[in-house]
Length: 458
Image 1 (cartoon, rainbow, N blue to C red):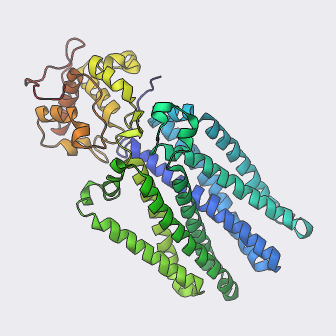
Image 2: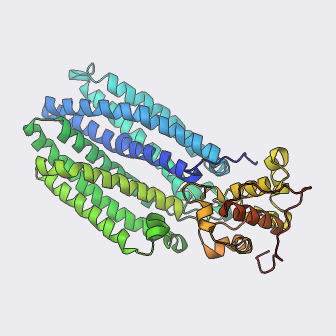
Image 3: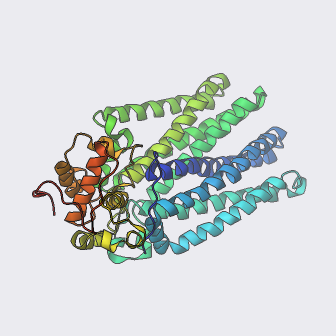
């Protein structure tokens, strides 16, 4: 099945999906899993110790968490489906066909999460005394549901980098229980609990003034932060060990981008600083130093969010040129289609272009650019194709299009015939030189290039 192509101006398709996804993951990891686990634990401690302070703190933090989870979290969750369905429809369709039942189960679990968390919040005051223990069980039921959701989704996300044997055996279990599943699951849980502990600490340090309760609660949050940090370090090492070597080579470039990738030491220095700051904060919190912990709580939280963003960026980027390794390129062209498009052309085999497309070469070039390049590049926006090609000749662009994957391994090969490559080269050349209009040919044929076209990869 073929889908209409959409391009987001300036931000680009990839960045749009990433921004919505990162906002959602900060909430789904940090609040839905990490913070909610701590809230239930705090309520349990209040029950066991007969402490109104623990119970009051848990209830106050829950109010902030539930508003954010059901408001921003649910909205961005739906936003992810909206953006990926529009901008990466074929990739999503492929994943749904492979993982229909895990995704169906996750949707059921999500509905149950919403019901349980609302019941947990609204029964807080009424389920006291004899019902308090049942209320705590209700909270733990939500945590189990949140962890189940993480388990199901991680199998799908891990597959997108480590598809293992699936492209050959097409077996569900080899897809879901791929080699990246467990290390990524533990890494995500570590991130969840460090974010949850830091959110809880910020709420404690900036909204609670009772020094006695701070000295009691802060050490617990410091320990959570420290052990979560240790879990993140160990699971990151484990995860990197199973990432295929060809993808691992792109990690530095994915984080530092082309601007700073020549200085790989920046990544290691930055990570070392982040670990050191988190360690210092954890020790301050563990020892109950509220003033010192308050000075580092927000910077440490921002560093944890930055690490989550860095992880998601690297996970998405390094699997290039594939959206699903061994099956689908990032431009949503199936690997097995490449030969067909190379031989017969993409335009004659593109339903929507045949139905809605224009016959002039400018629009043909725009369509070919959108299909081949718009998953990563924009026009006049982030990763601007015009800037990338500025100063290139039309002949040079033609040759580059024939060797994209050879020159830049995380770029997919150009999908289209030699004639379509010539159309795309002329289109991109006109863009890079500031010419926004091109004369339309008199019939459905590509523009004849003003050079022989020899020497390119046909």
